[in-house]
Amino acid sequence: MGKRERFLKIYANLPINLREEVVVMIQDQPISWRVAYLEVFNNTKLGLKILNKLDELMII
Image (cartoon, rainbow, N blue to C red; front, side):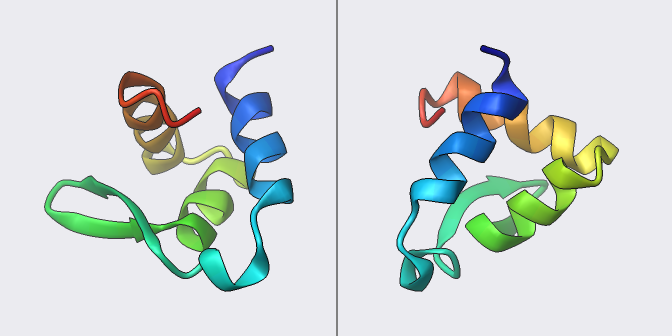
């Protein structure tokens, strides 16, 4: 299972109230689960950075 699939599976199982919490910092910007989802879902460059950072931190 790839990083994107792992992220989407974890996101789908997150309680809705946790989706607004910051999950990672990218370029000194706080990224919430919801923002991360939008970036990953739309396959943006920022989404790829988020996936790599979450994988590095063993969150996904």
